[in-house]
Image (cartoon, rainbow, N blue to C red; front, top):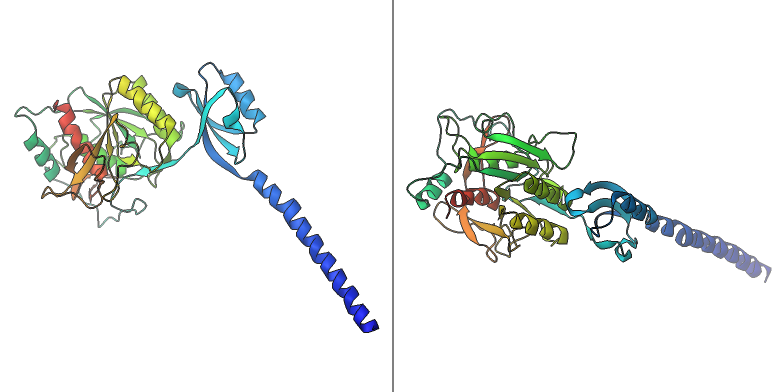
Length: 350
């Protein structure tokens, strides 16, 4: 009996110790972790809320301000996942600051080797340029005096086929850094639009257009909706004529749509890549105010990576030779390439 009682006492002591450990784990540790979980959000205030009041409201909700988007009276914050920001009467709405990425058929994170890149000596006319020129009027508009902004990874500011046409730009990801390209995607798009006619490299569909580089995506081709919105607002403030957005995401965004509507009201024509492998166009191409461009190949067949539903127009997007980083050239596929090709139709009034 004593042996049995001894075992019972040991079992009871073990049970108490385990119970205390479980109570400590679930009642102390887990709630602390939950309270520290945060996410990046966009907070859109009512129009009459000034900066001081915004700061007070964010402090009340323990939200850390990252930056303001002045044109929309919005603030990007890091806030707790259980924040009550959306319930504040001074706030119009709150949404996640979604990640948005370049649209293309190539792996966006792959860096191109020197063997893949090419040096161009004699000027080459890409097949996409010939195709678009054949569809244009006899008198082809070179884009002279037309201001085209490329919201992307930036533009290589030293590229000999682009430098004469680059008139300015803006970095929405970091005010302390330039709009120089560190990915290559934005430079490729820029060459399709406005590589100059200079007897070297390639030529664009509007070789005399003024280029403006809006760097809103990083070296990996990723960015935030807030950076795209800020770029669109910059275009409105600087009287841009055309915006190219070779980027997309699955999520709809109220703030992004408002920025697009505002740009449309200002008379800006917007084109975007219609990428989605036979599905429906992603955003911002899906918005009515934006021209959604699908991709075709040299045989006029629809590319397998192109969206089918919601596409407004089609343009070359396969085996596209254009400018790249470090004064080089590269062949890429994607609706990212098709969108800038359609600008040929816009500058020619089609």
